[in-house]
Image 1: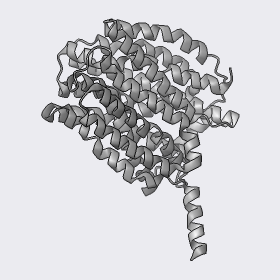
Image 2 (image 1 turned 90 degrees about the vertical axis):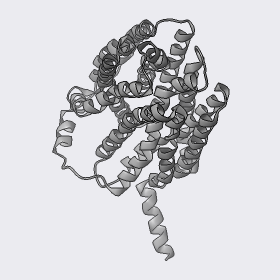
Image 3 (image 1 turned 90 degrees about the horizontal axis):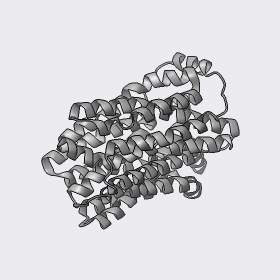
Image 4 (image 1 turned 180 degrees about the vertical axis):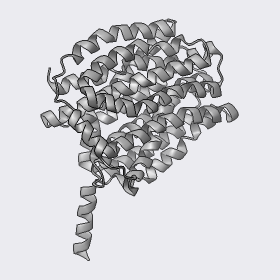
Length: 391
């Protein structure tokens, strides 16, 4: 198997066990007797663990390389992925998710480093497809979670079993990754780079991304609860919202490169932005589960290509190294995951979950307003030259 295909397969395998956790969130919430605000607080553990780990994970990956990070990361991640389902109160759930966030962020950083190395080694662009395979993986995991719920299997042991089945396959694929060069010199260069405040262009791209990732995190954590509590879905139906959402995210990402080359980044972002807003309105006004699933599908299409487009746009900026711009973008994107789920939980506690999810209309509208920031710098420069000549 080629380097690129190995990386794509690893992207697919990584989120399967985590995806099986998402449809079981309502079961854990019910078992612990938590309200929306309590669940919101507990869910903070995952993004907090992720954000507090990123600086240290970056140094670790720089020291040992992406390949080693993936091998050891899979062992650590799959060993703890089922811990949240074993929690017996809100405190243990919070810390279980924090531990999961630590391992998850480290492993995903290793995956992205290897995808970048595969692109530079082979000269083939695969980053968008890699994230498409990640979406397929989390969709497959969520379907496994839905199946386990339909069979009335305990959430904790079913997630643990899925992790146990994924582990040997993931290790077998990971050890076949080719050895890379010593990354120590790159790490030293990154540490010696002077600090600079983000430019207005980068901040605009981050504003575009924030609403998209906030929505992704919110749908992951709240779609099953919404279908159960608001539309009274039962059993396996509660998890279908996220499965449909993840399926359409993957579909959009696989077709994103072609659509971008034909219509341009800004046009695609605006169409997708309108789709996500329309989908959110459908979900909020849905009278039943079937209509809500249509809305979740539209949201999935709407947010699918946002992050890949933002990465390309930020990497095209020339005020700092591309890696530094992408790192800032990644931090803002993860912050969206941090803010979204708890914000919805606190609003839902006071006004209901329909209103809670409704707050996503605001960041999605802001993202739509900032789509113009996705024009690549080279494209912007060319337009300016044409304008000067015309003048």
